[in-house]
Length: 224
Image (cartoon, rainbow, N blue to C red):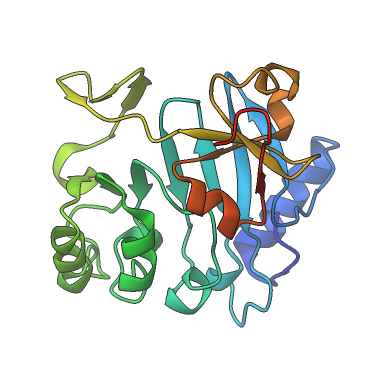
């Protein structure tokens, strides 16, 4: 959970459930990772400096080695600007497709091919807002909406994504370089040193420039 607390009924109900289940709350830091199946989730934003509950959303990127997925919760544009490591294939639209999220700043850096909008049919907020949909179109993103299609199920396999089991879409693999959190060096995928990096310490980059922007230096053996 984020470090921000609330006095709302929903939040108190959550705390009670955590207590009953005898679970422990963990507050992550930017860069923290954990394994999920064959892939890993990296926290790319933890709501630092948030002025409201929406902006305290935990922002995450999931990477299974073939494709990347980014989730920004309800974070607004001011928080989106603080996020790094956002390049992905699939984006879950921020704040149900709100005009105040899904900014040009984020989408231009993200370079996602697909966006999934989670929103109720005829919802009272008018989500997704037309401004957000126009931005998705501007960046040539294929839009999948739960108010139109119901539950969206995306399956990631090498070089293709399948949405709701009906349409297989060929994609180009975005991973070209692999970095080590320990050494802060990045390598080509076939470098001899890649196999010595544990999964939890691997970081994936789509370009040499992206790796260097994150503070990583090239391996002298493979010279990426």
